[in-house]
Length: 123
Image 1: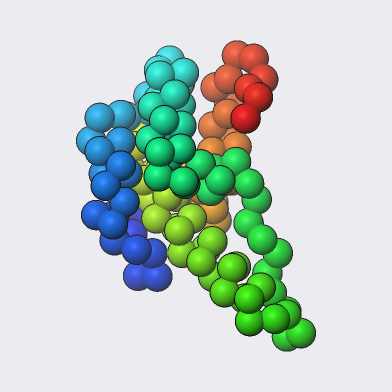
Image 2: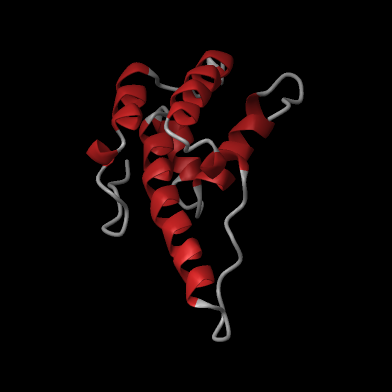
């Protein structure tokens, strides 16, 4: 299991995340994926965090990027780190091992959708 990164907000900052982690555990065979996904969407949507699951990270800023671009990138990365940890905590151990080295919540969520969705979802 992973621990929240030092740059991520504490999980207690996102009360819905803590609640989601306590209620839901994605099984390694994905048999409860539809229920897990529905609950994740409801919780994330209510706290304006759904974008972290459904939208790629902004491009990494370069030396000529504006401060606003850098700040937007850093804010996304910080929030995504917290959501990534929640996703990892809400999986059985076999799934955790496959997700732990992924860089963003979007990357983890996209992999899970591909692995366990029976039909394409419209997000």
